[in-house]
Image 1 (cartoon, rainbow, N blue to C red):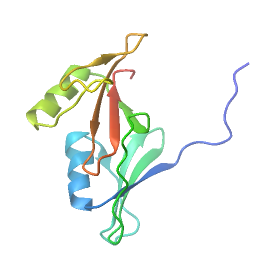
Image 2 (image 1 turned 180 degrees about the vertical axis):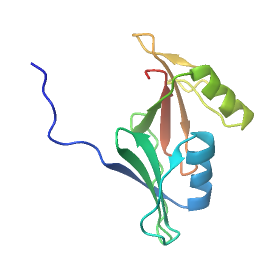
Image 3 (image 1 turned 90 degrees about the vertical axis):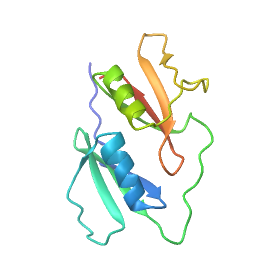
Length: 132
């Protein structure tokens, strides 16, 4: 019997230091679609990530974003074409690595899924895989 959750994800809030810089990353590097921003205060940006969920960027002027060290804490996106995504990163001179930290290398999970890891402008870990 399949169980259906009575709860679903609405959004993921990410604390950023510079909203414009982060908008460039999430919009141009990751290619997320920017949604209408309800606050209209210049400190927020919303991006659709599928399934009715969104990424919510919040610029906090008086606080510096935390610096995550461990790749274990990451935000993951899946793409249909990993090679095309990597070409985009390379065109933009945006470095990526595998799980072990080898620059420009792809990690292969035991089930064959390809993964790469990189950091956003505020040093948060991002995974992109081809489990689309």
